[in-house]
Length: 304
Image (tube, rainbow, N blue to C red; front, side, top):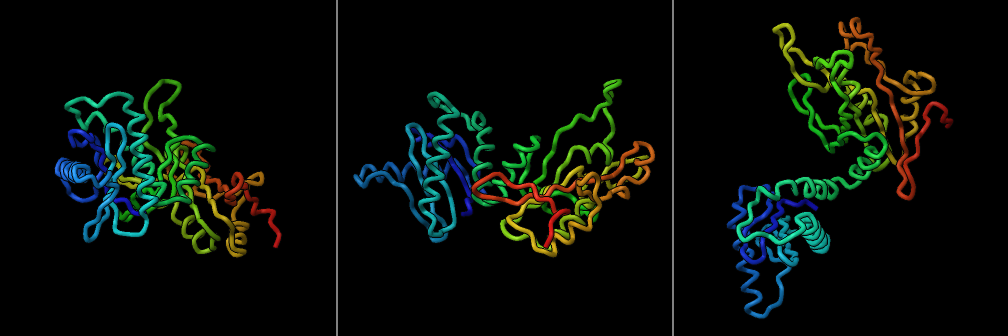
């Protein structure tokens, strides 16, 4: 289900408390209109209004004690799911404010609710990847982003299913001075994740592995603009199953004490000489299971 807008407003005054809208819609006009329609419905003894439609959109309404939550979505047969989401968002909003709404509320006071809304919409749009991201976060911690857009060396953008930023300190512990952003430091901070809600093919696997050294950012070094890659310290691949060709490809990767890795020495160039960084990106393979924890899959010992 594609949610195009969320507005939470005071049921008495119609003042918007929180809004997240795709289109350029004035939240005040929108909430005033919804409040007026709701009051009209009650005056005509038609009962509470739970939804209404335009030619292209459906507006779902969920009333709580102090607020009304409105969702804007394309006109599709997904009423119950949208209405349930509206009720849940309204409940979370009231739980978060924990008190009476003031007579003249300020939307800025509720801006942090954006994180809750984004999380719910993310789970609706990418249900499998969202479940995988929750698992990865429990496993490694850090800041987890879904469908992250990262810059390529060419200047275009690419999308990684899940990116984990471990938030490691970029300081020299001996003197407390901040280090410059280097490929070594970035490698230690990042984990890239590829998720497949089905069988992982050899082609999809190769495309992902070939792309991991191509994301980064531009920085000035000795008056020159250079590309610094994020080349991760680890990549994680999660799928319900793997094609025989994908497993054969994984078995061709280099290993260290039974751990698969990708040699990224070329990424570090001159920095390797100064830092001694080995340029290895370790590869973890998991099989997803709905009724249990994902299974760590040892491709090196798999026999057909």
